[in-house]
Image 1 (cartoon, helix red, strand yellow):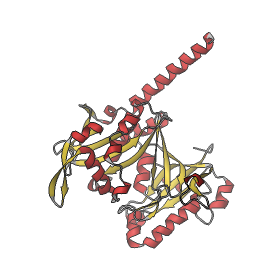
Image 2 (cartoon, one colour; image 1 turned 60 degrees about the vertical axis):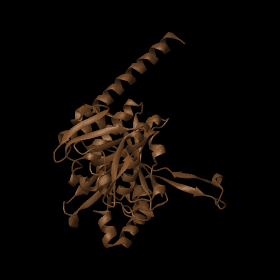
Image 3 (tube, one colour; image 1 turned 120 degrees about the vertical axis):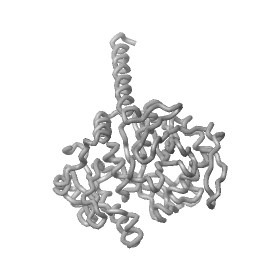
Image 4 (cartoon, helix red, strand yellow; image 1 turned 120 degrees about the horizontal axis):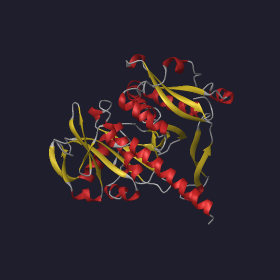
Length: 368
């Protein structure tokens, strides 16, 4: 190999190592108030006391704890408790849950299982606070699967944000440079965490990603999902995390959001052809509340969302042949490329009655 080529390779490797070191420093748990505690981390959070964030692996099948069944304490191992917590958060049947034998090997893939719990109580039915589950990928991109937070703690103390930070930090240490996951586009709280507090972006819309999920949380509805891309190496992401940590991030400017053209099912095709640099799309103020008071309207809104966003975004859907029953070879994936990403989420109005939730779409190569 010529000397110049060797020198260029070494310089590139040096730059890559420096970039990784900067990214690890930007996502280091100590930057966000956590302190190393044995194999995990600990942080004092107002209202909760000392909270422990602990990575789990196969060895935790030997870590005994307890769950509550009909009010009675039941001995159980830590990984089996994570399985039950999935059911508790989403209300899904056993067939939809990640079982112990998969949880046990996720760290071997470069993924992770991280739980949060109150130190004084322990990781059990009384002390658990949240968990996040992910798998590694040979592409260098972590695939996050589930993020769950105890119901009474949701939206109060940034537990989900902290769990994602730790997930990103561990992903970098495992050799990943980015992470992806899916979420329900109708859920504003998830959009706020992913797009605003983490600085991620949505690149794809997948129609009926998991089929009809039988879930107390989501209801028996089609599982259209946004795919989030989180660039763990991006200085912009690092800056966003720092601004969120210090309380300096103001969110999208309400006046600027109001000035963007609004996407509706009726105008979507024409508006997409006009190629505005940015556009906005509204989702329900609270989809769970809407499902309670007007289930028909909530389901209709989901269908309208497909029609409204499909002309703008990259859309994936299942391709099923005429003879696909019993013939997996005839089933594939169709992808229709789109020119827009979802890059921000804005909420205007604090009370549910007057709250407006807006996605902000930006054309690739368009204005910031």
